[in-house]
Image (cartoon, rainbow, N blue to C red; front, top):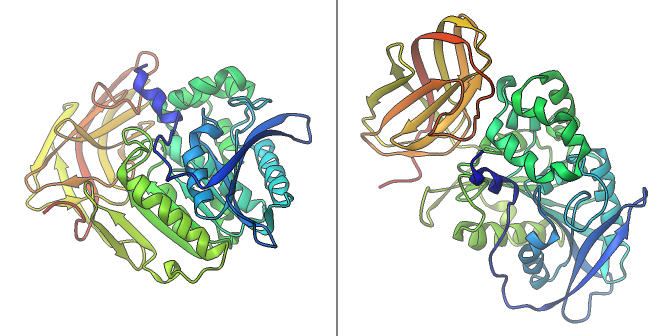
Length: 447
């Protein structure tokens, strides 16, 4: 497996916090099962308010630790918040076994929030949460479980774990393997499901464990204000995961889709440091501290251009149109016509392909490219019929004159590491294919 797959797990936030105006204390806290979790407590300089500093619980990504989010916690402390960043069980110097944001981790989250709220320097009623990737998923589940956060920021995470990593019952195997590898040594739970999860050999079992770790069905009952930050192109958690939250959340909400994320994106962009973090603080300022800063009066959905600092805001999810693209022939690689206008993808595109014959072919992967750039991908367990492949929801700019290529196979091939192949495939014969491309009615990027 290419080493670059492993970076999907880190979600490291390697940027410099502003000049320090806080103190930092390190400690451990015992959970009810005796496992100790490592934490760092950040307290603003000066005398705390009579009721204590407003607080924020800061949570890291899978395969990481509290150290990875030190700059984020520091930014909150500089903004006048007490912040606690703790390392999840089974990671870093914390004890225990990792069970992948399951009930045990949510019990830990509740205990850490309660410990934090009980500190004399911290308000016991004004506490919010910020989490990235694995941490964001835990925050969503913590909200559904009733942990008393006043507001939350969730970054590059999931609302429905199964559709994120096993869409249409086929694993995004390269991503799943990349997520599994760093945490396998301390997770008997993941060891037990590792092969089934990566190779889609037991979809029912994987679906059951993912359901227990997904907020999606409970979103209509969550009334806590949540700001969602999702990357334009994020192979682990595509834009659909944040759209789920925006569509279904009962409380106040905000959605930003920007230039950051898991591979092939990064979390070290200027967009992340200069926009996501200040907006995260402003959201908690409004809903944790009650400051009338106007963020709740702004258009709730904002989309960043592919490059630069341009951003466009909308009163709701942006309007889209469907652009049809035909791919004739029977070959595994096919070239479509040139676009007569610039387009920017947004939403789930559908690729329909005629399966004429199939024998022992466990997965049919489709990769849509513009030159060498992967625009999207998806996979199905093929059957002899007109099959529909739901492509991942990435926001990609396609200049006028672009020609898309679609490549079919048992894996993503050299062009795409999201879908790895396992075992020898059988045989398949394909007919014509047709792409229903979802695109913004007006691109944000480009001239």
